[in-house]
Image 1 (cartoon, rainbow, N blue to C red):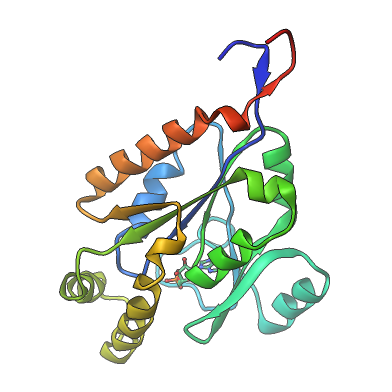
Image 2: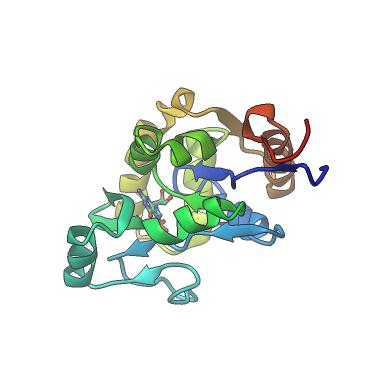
Length: 206
Ligand code: 5GP
């Protein structure tokens, strides 16, 4: 890009029913240079191997509620009986500094961001839904993960059915294949979004 041009960061929102392969995909996308990954806050307990501050910020109910009251969250939602929230400040600061941001949130959170009246957020948003190939495959992936009981799997599948109906609210839908395929498709979206004329600010003679 000519140095006459600059742009604010792009806000990539990714949603997928749990088990759709999103975690692996997000881990790969997080390695993109000049991309800030927004680590969500949650009241749920850490799963084996999850690291506080890297996978989530694990908060008590009380601290989560305090931060909510203080207006610290850009969006928050209750998912499967736990609370999840995106911290406002790091997202806005990075977008303003021209750094792209990735947030991994559920369909409720994505709807809140979509309806947000902050023009910086509205202009920056590029939302992507990862659609699992089918429910049998989703059940198989959840079972293979081995982190949930059969009851929890059934609850997640119920949520998945509701979430999958919302795919058309998103600007992009990726029908999930292998992780490599999903990653390649996501990278195409990232590249195309970076070329949108409306994002560019001309600072010189153009
Ligand atoms: P999990 O507990 O399996 O990591 O995540 C459960 C769901 O919560 C996933 O759909 C995930 O995208 C969503 N989630 C994670 N962080 C946030 C957040 O900050 N806000 C919202 N609304 N959903 C989130």
